[in-house]
Image (tube, rainbow, N blue to C red; front, side, top):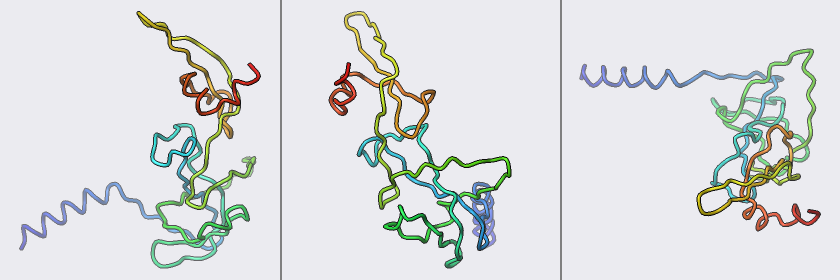
Amino acid sequence: MRRLQAAQDRQKRWADKGRRQLEFLEGNFVFLKISPSRGITRFGRHGKLSPRYIGPFEVLAKVGRVAYKLALSPELSGVHDVFHVSLLRRYISVPSHILQYEPLQVNEDLTYEEAPLRIVDKKEQILRRRTIPYVKIQWANHTEREATWKLEEEMRQNYPQLFEDR
C-alpha cells in the first residue's frame, strides 16, 4: 500500500509541474483560444503566424469549477458562451496599449478560414533537372512581414483569382 501511494505521489508531482491554476473573477477580461486553419482543412497544418487568441472578452460568471461564461461579441452569437479554463488566457490591461480590433470571421466551431490577400514576391528553386516556382503570399489578417512561400502550382489551383491580373 505504501509503495502504491509513493508511486501515485511521484506521478502527481510530475503531472503538477505542467499544470497552472487559473482563476478569473467576474469583470476580468480574457482572450479566447481559437483553432486557426488555412483554407478549409480543419486538421491540416496550422499556420504558425495565425492568431491564436481573439478578444478580449469580459468574464460574466463562473460556471462550475473550471468553466466561465463570457460576454461574446455579436459576430460570435452562434457560439456557446461557456468555455473551459484551458481555452482562456488572462488579459492584463496596460494604459499605453491600444487595441486595434478588426473583427475576425469565426465559425461556430471556433475556426476561421485564412485567405490569401496578394502575391508579394516570386522565386524559382533550381534543382539539378528541374525548376520549382514559388510565390510569396500575404495572408488576410497578417502583415507583409508574415508572408509565406508556397508552391506556385498549388496556389494557382486553389486560388486562381490571385493570378488573373498578372
